[in-house]
Length: 174
Ligand SMILES: Cc1cc2nc3c(=O)[nH]c(=O)nc-3n(C[C@H](O)[C@H](O)[C@H](O)COP(=O)(O)O)c2cc1C
Image (cartoon, rainbow, N blue to C red; front, side):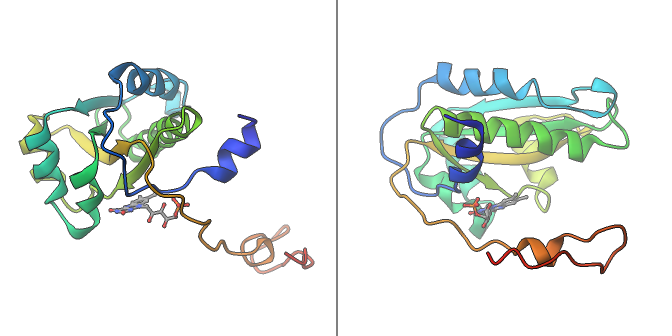
């Protein structure tokens, strides 16, 4: 895929076909995620590939937003180590998570980012994660069974300022 095409066609996929996701594809996406930038190149991330259906079910019950996990054939939890990047672990972890998501998309896999930050202790306990790690994201992963349209985006003239907050750019007509 072209770079812009990959960036612009990624969607949150919440419905998946029953087909199993090959582990090697997920490992390939994690391999790519290693190339995300991080503060001082600390790479504070770790990944737990969750294949156990009972564990995926338990994760799906954490919140309403976690429901897409219930029909996912695999889940990946992205962890960030607070000690390895004390100021930036959340940012670093989110960057690796985003690289991972885009790499999955480039291979034709669908995924959605599941919110973790209100359930940190429960997730760590369920997966045996030491307390110096924060689960930054859980991804529900599978072959897409839906093609969601793009969600509305704020226009450039709302989000871009020149030189100083409030100095808007001219309308782009988009
Ligand atoms: C930090 C973060 C948390 C999210 N949490 C959830 C979630 O718990 N459940 C869910 O279904 N989608 C979740 N999403 C997906 C967003 O709803 C989605 O990215 C957004 O609506 C834009 O849609 P798109 O990903 O298709 O562009 C989350 C996304 C991010 C970045």
